[in-house]
Length: 233
Image 1 (tube, rainbow, N blue to C red):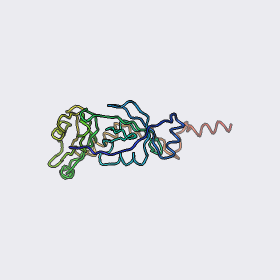
Image 2 (image 1 turned 135 degrees about the vertical axis):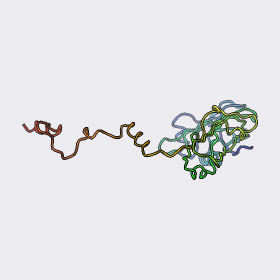
Image 3 (image 1 turned 60 degrees about the vertical axis):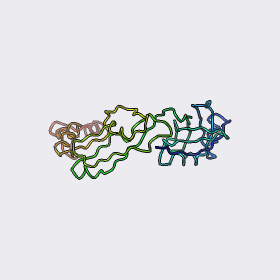
Image 4 (image 1 turned 90 degrees about the horizontal axis):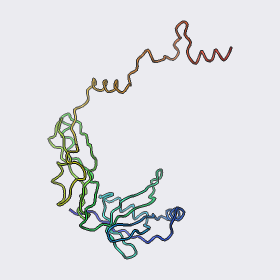
């Protein structure tokens, strides 16, 4: 099982500071840093478009990047990516250099197939974990885990450990094997929905609800009306 790899060129970044970083971004360059196995922490800069393409392969953030820094190549993963909170622009990227044999932690997406099977049986599919963290060698990161729901019915549960046969040799889950992954639930009845709404305080006592345009009882004054009368006196 091979990881998706992408070649990316970088240059050593000499200009530092917020001002310099801002000027780089305006020219389509993303400031970053590389550190890890076999490399001293080094400020770098990469092309924004090339970084975008690297992160939009089928592997997503799990892509393995062969980072060429002025002729010096390193096998890396994206350890951290900062984006603008409004525009979504790349602001800064951290690359971690890794060796082929070291274990890294990767979030593997979960794909469901045959979802119509439990649905046709009246069940509701509830995917609890959209990704599963695993400890795995860089070149063996799975693209995804596949869960076949064929034949599952109401009350059935799948746990992380049920994916064990899809793990590469030597890889382990970075989460408890008993962690719930998928459940097939029964539809909620109207009575249960009413109880849920009542427990959330949605249903209010009619006596506590003011009716617009309703005349106050004798001897009582509405709050806003009483204030207005007092102001006119």
